[in-house]
Amino acid sequence: MGTTVVCWNIAKRHNAWRELAQMDADVALLQEAGNYPPDVASKVDTGPREHWDSHYWNSEWYGDRFRWLLERWPKVVKLSDRVEVEWFKQVSPISMTAEDEIAVSGIGTIAAARVIPRDAAPFIAVSMYARWMSPHPSTKSRWRVGYPDGSAHRIISDLSAFIGGTDPSTHRILAAGDLNMAFSGKDDDPFVLRERTVTDRMDVLGLEMLYAEGRKADPTPDDLPADTRNVPTYHTTSQTPATATSQLDWVFASQGFHNGITVRALNEVEEWGPSDHCRLLIEFAGD
Image (tube, rainbow, N blue to C red; front, side, top):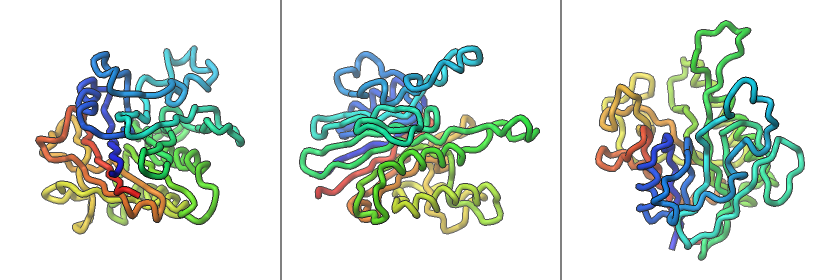
C-alpha cells in the first residue's frame, strides 16, 4: 500500500481543514495555514508549534514595527495512523543543527518533517511557500508586490541541509508547495529567466520537478508556450476555478525516488475546494 500526500495552499480557510480531514490521505503539506477549527482537532496533527512558527527562533526585533511576524504558515500535518511523523523544530540559520532541528533563513517559507510510512522507507517532507518580497526602498521600484524567487532561493538553501551527498539516490526528499511562479513562460520575459534559476538549483541538487496531471487552461494563456505542461492551480479574485489560468503550486522529489510518485491537480471545477488554490494529490507506489 502506498502513501498519499496532499499539497495545498488553504488561504487560512477553516473549510479547507474540514475537507482535508475527510480525504483519507496520510500527510498534508500546507501553505498559508492558520489554526484548524475545533471540530477537526481529533483528525489532524500539526505537531509542535516550533516546527512551523518562526516566532520561536526570532528575537523580538519586530515588536515596534509589527504586531506579529506572520499569522499563516507552511505546515506538515499528519492525517492518518498509516504513517509516523517526526517534525523538525525551526531554529535560526546556524551552521550546525541537532537531529530534530532545521535551520531556516526565511519567515513563513518552510516547514519540514521526517515521514515514516508503515510499509515503506522514511522520507523527508518539506512544505514550501515562496512569499513575495518587496524590493528595497532605494530601488524606487513600482513592483509593489515584489518577487517570489528570493524566498524560493532561501527555501532551497534550507532544504539543502538534508542533502549529504552528490548522488540523489542517497536521499529521499519530497518538497512541494506554492512557489508563486509558473516556470514555463516565454524566453523573452526577464521574470521567467529569474524563475528558471530556481528550477536550475533544484536540478543541480538532484531534485526532479514533477508535472501534475489535470485540466489545462483553455485557451492557453498568452504568457505560456503552446506546448506548456502547466495546469491551473490558482485563480485570482476576478476568476473562478473554471477560468483559472495559473499554475503556482509545484512538486519536487529526489531523482530516483521520484519514479514511484504520481501527481494530480484536483482542479476540475467540482473538486477544486474552498481555497483559491486547488489541491495537488501526490501518491507513492509501495516500495
